Length: 159
Image (tube, rainbow, N blue to C red; front, top):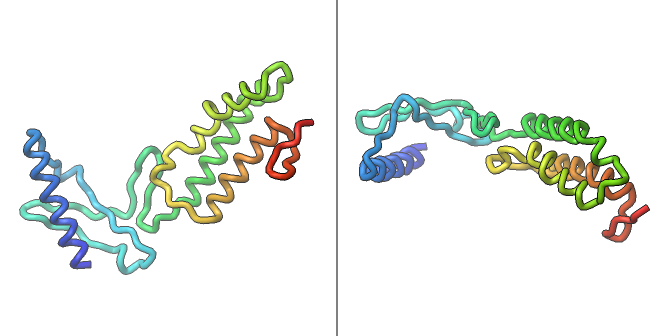
């Protein structure tokens, strides 16, 4: 842990130097830090003192509506995003089920109104195989409704 604190101190001092060049300063009361690890004893870090500033250690924080915790487990959040994607799909179901709307338009509806709801904040996710599978199942479910129910030899069969 001592090596991590040394590296964190170096990074902070570099950051502080660069912000001073821009006429900015780091707000001690708004700056927190978090240690992520699969080992519980490593996650329980205390406050960090660098020079005359003390930074509070936190167990979790919110980023883009996603609660990021020191266990790095996103399973609950990803399930919520998939559920919100289902709601977004069913809110637009009448458009997707219309035979007068082209398949490309239906795909555009999916890409612009449904997928962004599911993937919002995804740049902060670390996915397990189970979570990747759940996202793939959701996407296949929506695409089956747009293309039709059968996929053969890596091609969708049009009915």
